Image 1 (cartoon, rainbow, N blue to C red):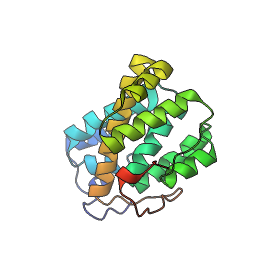
Image 2 (image 1 turned 90 degrees about the vertical axis):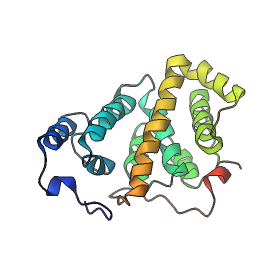
Image 3 (image 1 turned 180 degrees about the vertical axis):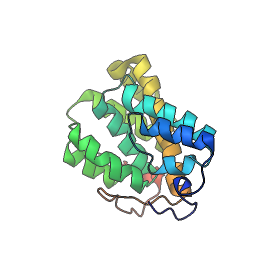
Image 4 (image 1 turned 60 degrees about the horizontal axis):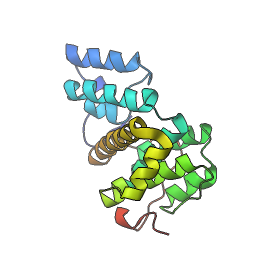
Length: 194
């Protein structure tokens, strides 16, 4: 991977701590150090703690994979995070998120859901990112659909993937292979209002 703003940490001399963190990531559920993790390795303590949180929210939270991937796609779209989109749109499709939903999110439009849990997760994720708050009705719908633990985990997923997206955008991490996120001429605050 070519990174435009920092050198690939794995290409240069590594400290023992960097090697330890890289090995932990490679031997974990991700199997590889890629994208924003390559940036974080420059700060091995941040990388170690952030990758542990990421492993939890992606692989071990109380939400199902389709629920998690929906929240990740909303976050990627709000932040226009191409790397995150390229990697997670195919996962979301494999987990059963309809192509029409994925396409609508990519365009910043309101998708149509046939499942109440996915509607609640979408609404919660959008409001939290776009409005910086969640209405009582949206909060109560999330609690009803995924429970208290699920709503806490959902907030954690949104927060973690915001950190991922900030890293991608700040360090100009290339998108890599996968579907491209279209460029939109609208601010995040204008998304999903149709």
